Amino acid sequence: MEVDRDRCTGCGYCLLTCPAEAIKSDGWATIDEEKCTLCGLCPSVCPNDAFSGDATVQEPKREHESDYDVVIIGSGIGGLMTAAALARDGRRVGVFEKLSFIGGRYTEIDYGGYAVTTGAWTSLGPKSNIGEFLSEVGAEVDYLSLRDRRCDQQFSIRFKDGREYPSLQAMLPREDWRAFVRALVRGRKLDLQEASTRDYIEEHVKNDDLIRAVNAIAATASGVDIDQFPASEYVVITRDTAKAGLDFAVTIGGVRTLIEALEGVITSHGGQIFPTKEVSRILLDRGAATGIALQNGDRTKADSVIHNGGIGRFVKLVGPENLPPEYLARVEKLVPVDCAAIILGTTEPLLTEAPILMTPGTDRVVGIFAPTFLDPSVAPEGKHMYDVFLPLYSDDRTKELELAMGDLRALFPDLDDILDIMVPMFFTGAWAGTESGQTVGQVGDQRLDPKSPIPNLYLVGMDVIGSGAAGDLIPIGVRRLLEYLS
Ligand SMILES: Cc1cc2nc3c(=O)[nH]c(=O)nc-3n(C[C@H](O)[C@H](O)[C@H](O)COP(=O)(O)OP(=O)(O)OC[C@H]3O[C@@H](n4cnc5c(N)ncnc54)[C@H](O)[C@@H]3O)c2cc1C
Image (cartoon, rainbow, N blue to C red; front, top):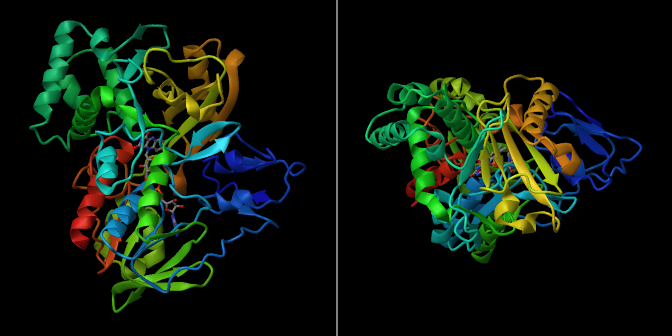
């Protein structure tokens, strides 16, 4: 097997999946030929076809129908939420997924006893947009919340110089805290889509530590810094996290339980999901979508086609020549967000105050999530798992990783003594954190509408309208799409 370095986006799914431990990553995957058994699993989990060699991906034998009411391309959380709602509504739904697992960036892969996320670590709990959508479609999940853990903060704050605060309020002089809260409450009534978060906060409070902390919070929720992150979005994420309050939670067993719950709703209502079935073309007839063609040559018809595989792939599958020039021009201007996560397994806990640590003023690391703080079952007994999040500032992934590890060693001086596993995961290029991030000009209703310019063809997922913390904006676009299809 060989890895094409230009195609490797650094996600690390291959490393997590390889049963022979033949794959390593310093930002790019490399294979140890001596250990590789040619089992064929790595190409089946690679989002960008970076592998070539003798092994072939085994396609499941299961047959799909020759026509559906709705076909969905991609089984990300957006595609599955849509499929669940439509299947419950009695539509004949088929979901086609390129990878050998479903859930996209919202599930876990088992690695050394740890349930390592493919992207997201929590849906924020039952009061989030995702949580409310799940309960509406009857996808039942169990949560472990801050309240269950008798913890009263979603996050604490630690600077590299050793200063620590249990909350933003504790970090700020009383007058600054009041001015900050007033600005956020006032911001709900203002149109702040064109204002940067930095400008808006600095207009109301002069406090450098606050600016650094707000930057860490914004970047942790979106991958975007406060100069690019519109103040309107910052106001929304603070409102949504305040609403989650002490019900802020993880789903027991990891985010994949939420994917499994959606899968259960879809299949119990007659819907079908096909992993390892890549769509190679969206079929059009007289300018309208009529179905899909698969990589293996099969075709299937549908009254409606919904694309959940990212806007770049959408253009390829439909053919740029079939899209209006102004739509293409808009898509070309979208600003993607590259980011990375480092998964740490440790023998001692790193966080004891709250499930999230904001780390303002570091070189790279902005926030650290501790799934095991709320749910120990996602790591081997007695061990702890951390999901370290960082925006990227260069294409040199190895250097970005070194800078992040430097931050971690400064924040946790005994890290190397207690480290059990370390897995770098980059979200770049064709598998970016998101292809249209929450930057000025592409927030809320400025994002793409679920209705594409082509009749019967729709979009869903992270590129579509909505505001909120990371994936929690997706249900807003799903709801708009469901209105179009009702
Ligand atoms: C490091 C990181 C941390 C995050 N943390 C959180 C968090 O804690 N909470 C949160 O809510 N969000 C979080 N997010 C964001 C969240 O992961 C994403 O917003 C969400 O998973 C995107 O879902 P989606 O529906 O857009 O689909 P995706 O997850 O992008 O899935 C799209 C699917 O389409 C498939 N596909 C593509 N092309 C084809 C084709 N031609 N044929 C068939 N299938 C195809 C892909 O294989 C994939 O499975 C995080 C993201 C990252 C990168």
